[in-house]
Length: 269
Image (tube, rainbow, N blue to C red; front, side):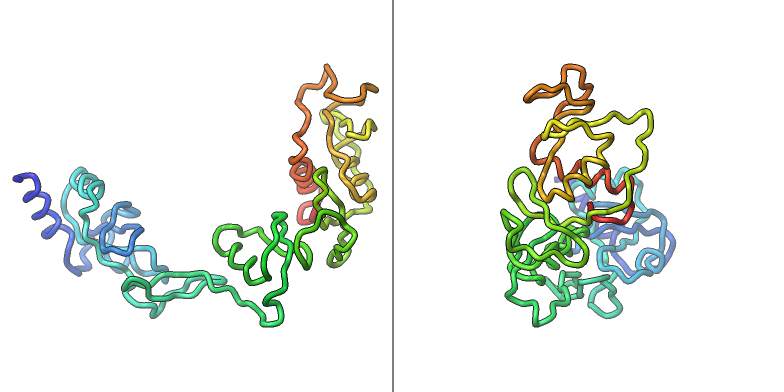
């Protein structure tokens, strides 16, 4: 009981008020309640903590020890003052707007969706189908910053009906899924002496992953990597001398895209 009273007194006396003296703490406000648990900055004024336009920070006027702060924050008993109490002056960034939720401002996803794109399914670069471009933009805003539209319509299991944008071409991976990729006609650079050739699933030895990637692109379907090192003429399985295991079937696109990023930065694989 005595401990609870002490904690309560510290909470009421040490963490309330609106003074701008340089004895406050800047917090990450993670919940809708005016309670804070994660310290961002120490010994800062309200103005220093809350000078930006974001909604995720809060401030408390504190002069107690760091140990007490840690204890109180662990118990969720730190009363803090939100830096923003309304949406006025709040900047949320691309595809987001500020809305009042639970009595406090919050940045929520609100992508700009042209009316003509609504209800038209699209296939994303993650290989998933989305109801329309708006649904894809919402998913991008919610944690997939690299997500984009690969082609119009639902994701397909063949290239027969896929229309790829621009100069990209349709290829199918080893599961039959259709992807739009850019086939570069530039010759592959001579592989360095440290790079091993690769054996494709077509039992052809390619000088590098780049050469296998180009062959995949122009043939329009997956070749895949059987193993690193030259092919041995065996009908299946990795070479006994291969220093690395064969790629899983689902990883061929990731391998080719990784190589493409190194060889041609900014190009799609």
